[in-house]
Image (cartoon, rainbow, N blue to C red):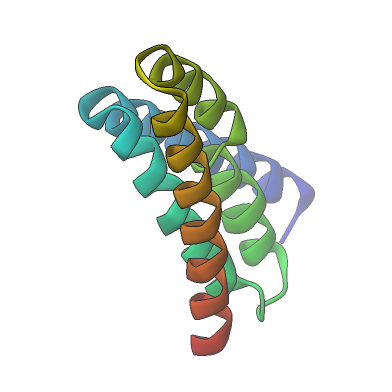
Length: 109
């Protein structure tokens, strides 16, 4: 692939991932952000055994823009106002779920 094709693909994948994350998290709130991060970790696990420009574009740009730690932080801050225990559970479940999903993706790849 030429540098231009990779750059354009990177931009398109990053934009698509960002818009998808925004739409899902806006529609579903904290649960949507958690779902996105867990699903993205699974997909990254699947991609981990591949190489090449397409894997880099999909993994780094598409899934990197889709998943986000910065989305967890404001959600957990909002949840902590209602209950610090709820926020702790949200963060713990997100991290544990994403780690398990990535491991499952790696096992299937």
